[in-house]
Image (tube, rainbow, N blue to C red; front, side, top):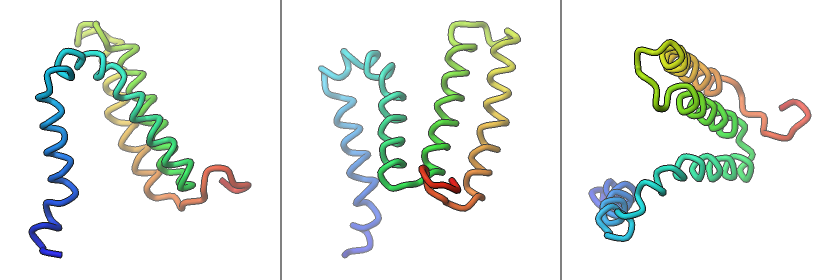
Length: 117
C-alpha cells in the first residue's frame, strides 16, 4: 500500500465523515440531543468491546472515565467555578483519573470474569 495512503486512510476517513456529519442540516438541529446522549453511548460501546475482547483494563478505564464524568456533571454542572463542590470535583478528577489510568496500564491483563481477575 502506498505510504501516503496508509497514513491518511484510517484517520482521514474518520475526519472526513465527522466533518460531513457536522454540516448536515438535520444533525445540526438535533446536535444538543446528540451531545447529551453521546458520552453514554460511547461508554456502552467501549464496555461492550472490553467484554467481547476480554480486556479488563478497557472496562475499568471506561468505568473510571464514566465516574469522573458523572462527578463533574453532578457536582459541577450549572454551578459557579468558584464553588467549593466544583473545585473539589474538578481537582479530584484532574488528579485521580490520570493516576487510575496509569495504574490500569501498568497492571497485567487478566480478563474480566476470571477467578484471578
